[in-house]
Length: 289
Image (cartoon, rainbow, N blue to C red; front, side, top):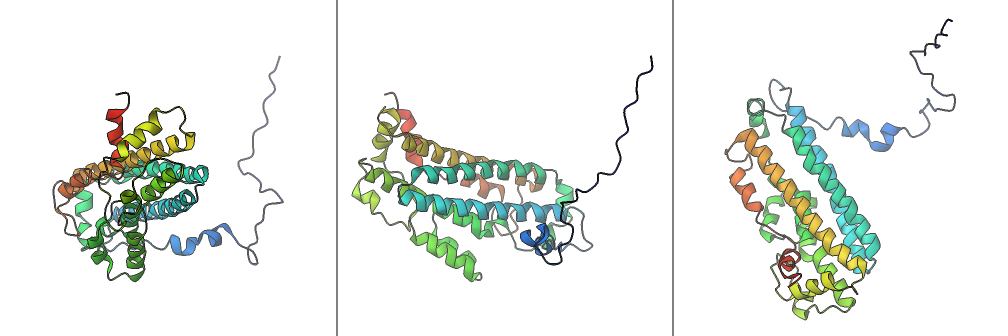
């Protein structure tokens, strides 16, 4: 008995008749995304142009796009927390956490750049450095690591300076969360609620029993418990990103100074000591005691 042969598939997939192909008078995918400008915003400066410089540029441009979205979500989360709309605020934080994981994994792409490859175009960077990323500083500011001295770096960039100056004067997401807890009846001292928000956050011992109650009480509204864990997730993710940054830099340039004048790896290592929400870590020692 002969087995019937299957009909071979055509090598070309026909376009469905309903698919639009004429975009003279309507918006296309490329127009909506601004691809004309986006895909022509990479300008390698090495002479002759080094193959791997495009990777370096796209890696950092992509990071800046993610940072733009992180800041967008953190600002909205802060606004919603200020209105005690905790559920929607936490939805924004969930998105930030997903972005952070993507940004951390992204270091593996730059990690394919060998020391020899980078050395062949590093001189083209001049004094430019990731240290000068105003969006990164903006994210640090809204999370609590404020430093008015950083504004000097951006005096030649009016819009960046304006953004950071504004965030310096505004409460952090942690400040707003603590105010929400106070409205819920938790014992947050007036000194904390009315602190000078221009200053970086410092450890407040009086908050530890507040968080102990939140974690241990069966009466705690789930949203506040979840918010505490989301903030811890944010910091853990931030530290993971910092660590991967450090290790990528170390494997690429060793212990050379950074192009922007920093000490390089040593500078990045000290950043690992920074913390946004120290009480949320300190309380873990007290839970169950």
